[in-house]
Image 1 (spheres, rainbow, N blue to C red):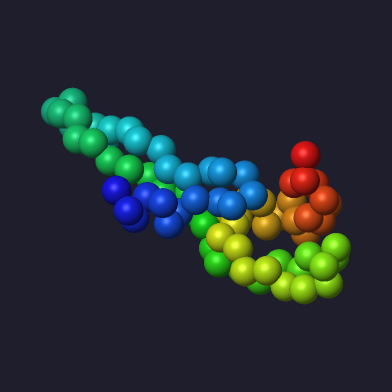
Image 2 (image 1 turned 90 degrees about the vertical axis):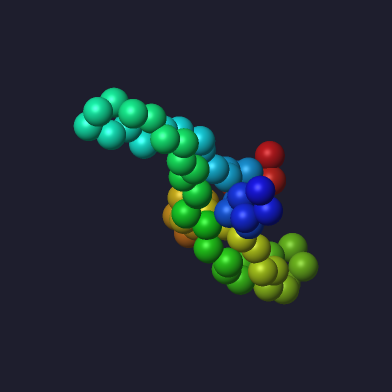
Length: 73
């Protein structure tokens, strides 16, 4: 269970999804799909410093367009 906590976005709280792998014989096996999370240095304009965060790639795209203030709400 500890490896699930690693793949969690600190901005959007996106983490993992639980589902099934379904074979040709319709046999179901459990699987876990992890979020695409990267460790990145993000500039915080309020303090003028860089902060290392685990961020999903979708959140990285939003950061590039709107900045860190988009996640303050």
